Length: 192
Image (cartoon, rainbow, N blue to C red; front, side, top):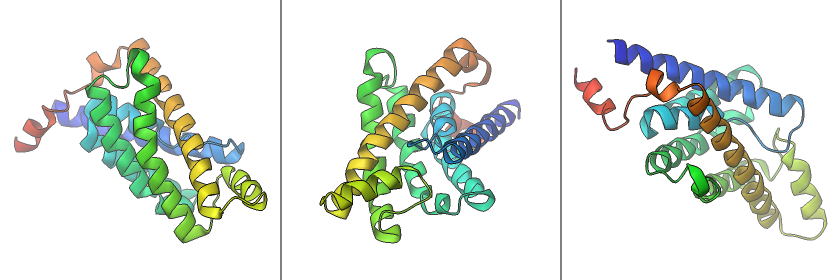
């Protein structure tokens, strides 16, 4: 029972970080999203399954409370949690691999974000990066290409910052020893 409580506390902490980060980014018009810090933190502590849950619940919470657009981007959080969880535990999000691992997390999320942004919103969302999309589009770049360029750059920066921030939180706070559960062992907890 103690392990399940740990998992619930870590997920709640991750959701809170996602929502607060997204709120700060939206309030101060920061051109990246800051809504995946908690997802990546949970990916590092618990693995992909719980990171995906954290990401989706964070999107739903943000969507219900202050940013309706966030609801539509829940699939992006699924991808973030999945790839961050796997890459974190395969050591692609540590040491000199952090920039490459962040890119590997950012590319699928960028593609999904670009499709959602282009198909549902024609490039205009609540994020301040929409202004960059509009500028590129008015410069003659096709709308879908503009969206994809902006998404790749902003998602990469977003994931890189989130990974670095997460590593600092886990290492300096020695969180893995206190709150981490080997993600391959979390399946055993479900069978109890």
